[in-house]
Image (cartoon, rainbow, N blue to C red; front, side, top):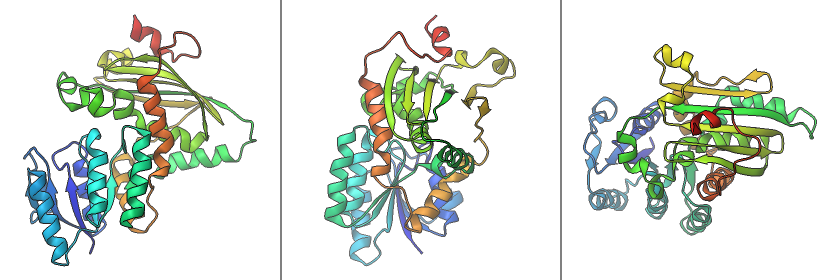
Amino acid sequence: MKRFALIGAAGYIAPRHMKAIKEVGGELAVAMDINDSVGILDSNFPDAQFFTEFEQFEAFVDDERRAGRGMDYVAIASPNYLHDAHMRYALRSGAEAICEKPLVLYPEQIDALQKIEAESGQKVNTILQLRLHPAIIDVRNRMAALPGDTKVDVDLTYITSRGNWYLKSWKGFTEKSGGIATNIGVHFYDMLHFVYGKLQQNVVHLNTPTKAAGYLEYEKARVRWFLSLDVNDVPEAERAKGMRTYRAITAGDESIEFSGGFTDLHTRSYEEILAGRGFGLEENRVAIETVSHIRNAPIVSTGEMHPFVARALA
């Protein structure tokens, strides 16, 4: 049985990691979070140790290692800006890391982590769950079968409304979350690269704390994208039904639907990691370079704009 530690046990995404650890037959030996709202542990691993101080967590993991009961994996679901430090800790403690997206905020952090992997002999595994979704794999395979000069027109729209708490939490601070494109969009950019190939152009048309939009061109696609946390950006017909989230990806005349099975992909990710097929550091590079550019790029008011941009600026 593989032994796991979890950093960030009180966060939104932590339950998916606990569920995945349980479903792959692992043991969550210890969890850590500065917040103590972690009653969900009782439903998954009631015997797990828990600490709110990182130093106590670190001491426990070290004691276990010295006693011959070291962690095989450290799962990281902490705030984005802490991922780099927590992966470094995991590798140097003799464990492999399993890190949530975004892997890091800056591309140069990938280079540093690769050096620590080489020094420690351990590996960073990452959660790029859309690469495992059957619908996405199907689109990728169909694109690969088309002539090499084929380019499809893609519109990506993702609106996931958030309340006032969002901008007051760490997620509302660009230096901690990376901004909206990094925090809620990075897995979409990875998916686009995975399906459509090398990134060739990255233009930003809108970038505020609650919404962002731009144009991306890949080897096989021209993509207009729009992300928002504002419920008012949800199409009126959907809002009338009480919907506060709207997700749509169209490629040419085709709608790409991947909502089903989305929450189960963490378990699939863990299965692949335990089988030695986890996605590593390098697989993340294009997506991290993409969001890093978006964060700092000048705003361009011309070109191929997503149709929601004009309304968002009104």
